[in-house]
Image (cartoon, rainbow, N blue to C red; front, side, top):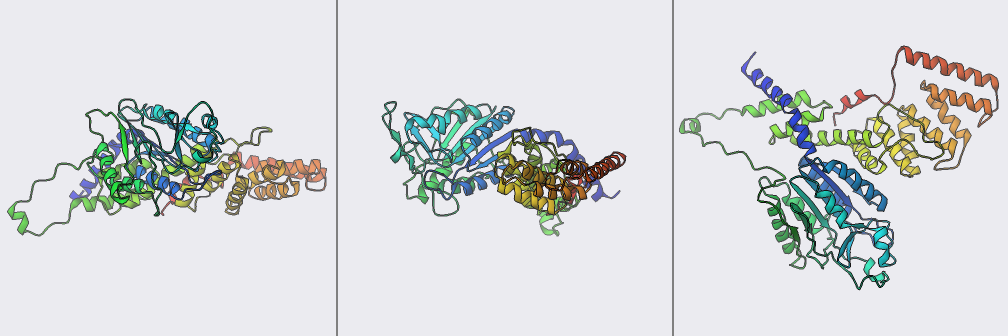
Length: 496
């Protein structure tokens, strides 16, 4: 074995040894990112969704596990916070970023969901999210809890809100807070003042945050000092960001300082031809080896071992796509390759987290457009979220790509009248498409339709014929278990 291959071998061994540490690092950073733009009872904000998308992407590059929610209503935000709470307890760093409307009521700060109407100040408790809930969540992180609020934007609710005797005023901005130890709360604007939404893609505050967040070796508290300076310059000192909290002396970084620089070369090496850096050869070889893998840990280690590689962006995209795919399968509930019946009389599928599934599956579909499983899972998420038009479109797309499970889902929606007008004729057509792909469950439904005369002419003969077909299909599956869709090995084809 040559020296070059020996080096590559040792690098691969290092990758294997670092797997456990990589998993711990990934779990050590958790973030919840919320961007609310499409308010139903007040003016739309143009930037929060852009801000949230860009911050989420940045945090993922910094090895955070990110829960992202766009245009969240009251229930969706509560659900996202519950999911975040279950993860942040095991984290070293917990971050919550919120962009959207926010207000103060009698010294209490509130984040405003997109479905909040807020006719009176009494409605805040039932229609908005108290900042205390978010502070309690991030305080569970062991080293640092960080809340970033680009939410003090000029608020339309204050002018129309009827005031009760409970409070004397509703302020425009957010009030000062006293967070728990090792919790930092960063406001886009000083307490009692408003922030600017901006005319570009991002607000001035988030633009500055994105500029400095990934700076290597810049301690977290200094990040927000630089953000403050940039925002004040960009707004001609009209907006002054502010941070509240008391941190320990232990330095916390989003991106660790660079290793100690190497010693300068000696005179002999200066006059000799510069050899090709071995690390470049190694990173290219390792990338060729892992580029088509579906193992997230390999890409996590690649990012750590070769931060200056020419393939670093490819590795980030690959890792983000795989994480989104895993989250899509996880939060859609059923998992790949399964198709369980909806709960009786509830109209619900077995999906666990529709809001998170919708976001994750959208990313997975965009990253891996050829993987039919993610389209099916996206349809499941939309169906449970009661976005039936979107569910129908995704199911039809998946069915056209050969997914019998998608055809069965469509058939069930037509059969039950869930989402659009009940039609046994349409249901039978979709069951028949799934039956043509060899699905015994669809064949049994067609037999039942013939037996009962639903969507077809009643026929005992046809019912018996389809039941025999279903039995034969079951026997074939038992003899040679395989499923044409969706197969887990599809993920090996990700070469985007």
